Amino acid sequence: MGRVLQYAVLFVATLFFLLPVYLVIVTALKEPSAITLSNTWQLPQRWYWESFAQAWTAFLPKLQNSFFLTVIATLLSAMLGSLNGYVLAKWRFPGANIVFPLMLFGMFIPYQAVLIPLFQFVREIGLGGTLWGLILVHVVYGLPITTLIFRNYYAEIPDEMIEAGRIDGAGFFGIYSRIVFPLSVPGFVVVIIWQFTQIWNEFLFAVTLVSSPANQPITVALAQLAGGEAVKWNLPMAGALLAALPTLLVYIFLGRYFIRGLLAGSVKG
Image 1 (cartoon, rainbow, N blue to C red):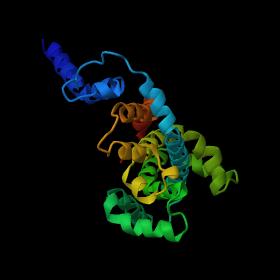
Image 2 (image 1 turned 30 degrees about the vertical axis):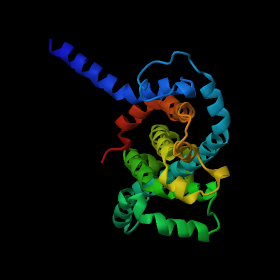
Image 3 (image 1 turned 180 degrees about the vertical axis):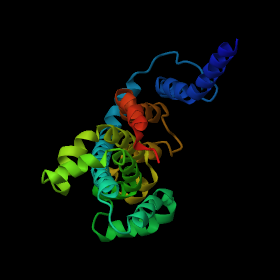
C-alpha cells in the first residue's frame, strides 16, 4: 500500500510538472485564430503543424547564433577549466589555497552586479554587440564551476601516475595530454552538459550585450516576439519547443554519462 501511495504521489506530481509543457504543445498546434483564453486547455480542433514550419523559418538564424555561441563557449570553458583543475590538483603552487577560493567566489556573484562594468569592458575591447563578446563573457563566467568540477575530479587521480610521467621525462603538457586528458571523459561530459544548458538558456547577458538583431541568440528572439500586443502565440510556442530540443537531446544522449561523471567524484568536495 505504501509503494502504491508513493507511485500515486509521483504520478500526480509528474502531471503537475508537465502542465506547462502540455500548454506549450497544444498552443503551438492551434491555428492563430483558435487561440483564446476560453479554450486555453482544450486540445486543438485542427492540428496546425504549419506553426513549426513558420517557427523554423523565422528562428533559424537565431538558432544558428545560439549553436555557434553555445558550442564555442562550452568547449573553451571546458578546456580552460580542465587546465585550471589540473594545475590546482597536481601542480600546486604557493598561494593556491587562496587563489582557488577566490576563483570559486565568482560563482556567487549575481549577473546583475557586474552587468554595467561588463558591458563597458566588452565595448572597450571592441567586442560590443558581437557574439564573440558574449562568448568571452560565458567562458569567463563559466570558469569557476568548470575549474571546481575538474579540480575535484583530478584530485582522485593517484599522484603516483603523475610522478611516473615526470620520471619518464614528460613535462606539464606532456603529462596532461598523455595521462590526465584521456582520463577526463566523465569530467568533460559533466562540464559540457552543465555549460551547454546554462549558456543555451541564458537571457540577461544576451539581451544586454548583443544589441544587433542579426547576432541575437534564440532566447532574445523569443522574448521579443512574445512581448507585443498582437502576438500569434502558436509561433513563439513552436519556437520555444524547437529551442528546447538541443538541450533535451543533450540530456537524452549524455544523461547516463552525466550520472557516471557525478558518481566518479567530479563534484565531490
